[in-house]
Amino acid sequence: MALSQAAAPAQASAATAGTVRLGVLALQGDVREHSRALAAAGARVVEVRRVCDLDAVDGLVLPGGESTTIGRLLRVFELLEPLRDAIAAGLPVFGSCAGMILLARDVLDGRPGQPLLGGLDVVVRRNAFGRQVDSFEAEIDVTGVAGGPVRAVFIRAPWVEKIGDEVEVLGRVGDRIVAVRQDNVLATAFHPELTGDTRIHQLFVSMVEGIRERQGLGQVRGTA
Image (cartoon, rainbow, N blue to C red; front, side):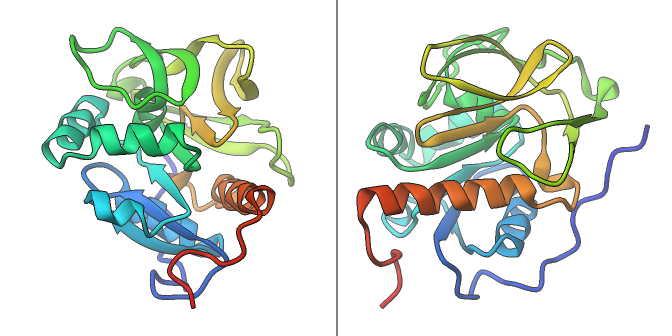
């Protein structure tokens, strides 16, 4: 089965006003695809490469890519500890595929010393669905996403083997957990940025807006 093509460029751009300003970690992976999907979902989008960039966003996407490479680059760019602290302090974060791995408290079949950000009380198995040649697509129901099943693209994807008491399971493939949320953290084992369907990104935008409302924050960062 052929994998879905990446979404066409959205009409909205990073300079377009939106309800929230969301960052995409721009060290490696599907940065452009996530940026397009977030813009189409109504967010203002900025790329995050430095610690000071974190102060300008209301939420952050950790893109699909290579989790060990992203982890190494987080250290090189001195973002690892600041991002850990920001997530622990409540920064809303969405991780897809490699992003899910980075957000886990523990990883099976990972590299020795692989750096993790934490935020999700889950144990994730890296490359659980197989190699690149084992990539596949599936229709899955995702809690909180209206309009029918989501077309999910799995590329060297992980799955969640164990969850903590505070983790909500949002989606499965068979009996395998592939979408979860815990407080301010959302994660999928698949790549919603590659299908042209922005509903998962819309879910994250709504999640960030809801968190801001509960915190009683009036203005979006970066706006007058």
